[in-house]
Image (cartoon, rainbow, N blue to C red; front, side, top):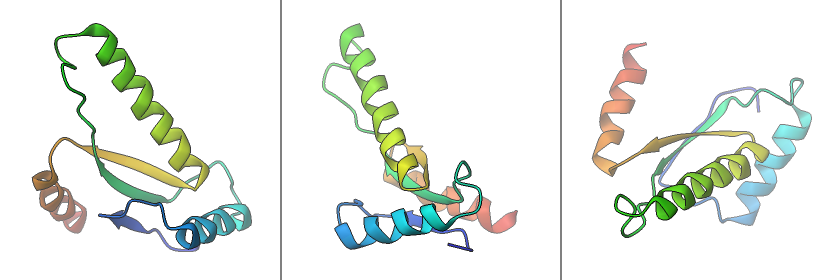
Amino acid sequence: RERTCLFIGVSMTDPNVRRLLEIAKRKQSDVEQSNHFIILKRDVFSEESENSNMTKFSNVYHALKEAEFKELGLNVIWVKEHNEIPGLLDSLRTQ
């Protein structure tokens, strides 16, 4: 809880990990600040670009996912493809 964690390739369905994150968030001095991150591949729904309703659904779906992870103290970093992750990690190393 005192360090920043980056989750890569984790589905966050493990109840033990979720419980640990919930405990860490509760014990955090500033409950509004989330200092942990998770990299997730943005879900692409079929016909999303052709159908405005699917685009709206996609936006709402991803906003709900972000809210769910915010409750665990996680900030979501979305990627379109998994091959973007090495570049993100390289940029973190140079900062």
